Length: 234
Image (cartoon, rainbow, N blue to C red; front, side):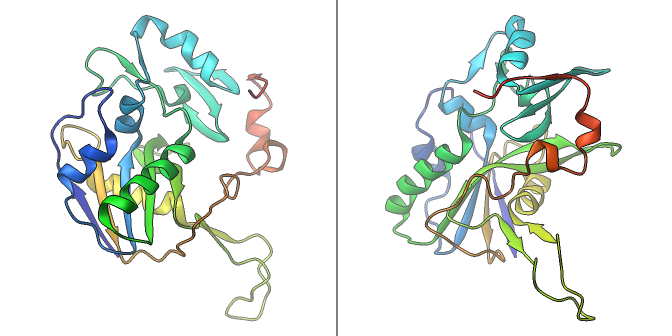
């Protein structure tokens, strides 16, 4: 697998995302996965606000909120994240929310880019970064994707010694996101795009946005979520 980050000019709020991408990536090969940071997707949607609205928006954007030392631990779109993904870095004095619907955004972008590039098998992966509990630093996470299956299921298969797997699955989407985010950077790199070639994925016309989510009550970390405020899903 090869991951190539792409340096670009600054993306402007409200501009055409597909046009921006094709300007910086003129050609794309069949079976490529295009990685796009969630920030420029959100900017293309106008998902920005004033810093004074940050606390209210964290509550409004979250399904579950728990106050912590440096902010809020939240649950949004089935993902455990910090401050509902609302970001102040590289935001030019504003705050940037997450895309409204990252799976839909990935699907729409895939349809537009397949036509422009003249390819049939194309993956789109929208990424963000997150902090893992008890670990320093951030890793990548997949907020939404299209064109490939995000999960590899080993359940029912047998291991090297003939034992049947009961729960093992590989999180393909988040693994690709982490690899790409590592090279795209978190600072002044100005690399909001990356192209992944020869990725070990199964390309698909349709993907399920729920394939990687686990019901709140069934998650092994559920005891950690017993406190806080559980908000009604919209």
